[in-house]
Image (cartoon, rainbow, N blue to C red):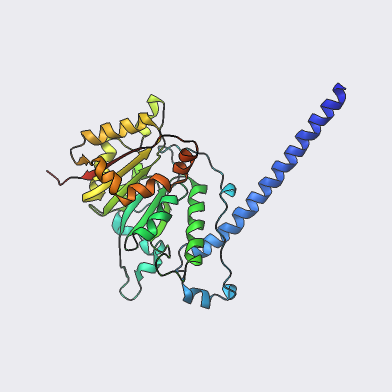
Length: 303
């Protein structure tokens, strides 16, 4: 009897290895196909003229939304590591036309708009997708440090733009994502007082005390956020970790350039409503019936 059990266990292990191997090959093939599509389309203005001129798209087949299971990645990333990121030496050297080609004026060789809303650590892009129709006149940028997660958001935006070409109210031309480390290079991307809103949605809590220096809200970083945020601009924070919430509130309360907004603002502000339910992490907390902690702060005038 024991020999039979051993053979069954061995067979199960072999089947599992085969299944894992097949899944790995399937994931790699899917990523390769998406990468080719991404290289061709992520910096292209996707509109009716583009589809008409593109012989491969004469049938106007819709690009499918990416499947998240093929973009597996660790949940956390060390912000102090060398991730070999590309970043401009100054905001003046940033070419935004690649990210928002719909708003690039080819005749005058300049952008018609600037990025004014930033989602730091945007994850899988749920917040940006929901903000897009609410702020059609704003350019919204997500910053994400993880490679595969950034790839997913890029593929998601490409598909949404192509699927909504005939939608005048929501065409998702005003959102995009960049792989970047906001803790190191935020002033390299944005001019002084350029942003109107900054979102920190369910950031990495870094539970261990020795890791607290890696939290996205610190005294030093808040001064950088104040630099790129215009007077009257808003910082939005949301987390399901009470300790992190208290940490962010403590540091924001202590900073001289930020003022806490009251619960009346939080109850009536559309952005608070959107960020509470739109992100993938927020939906997960909702399914698990967890608690969400929210606080918003206004950028004060310079003393």
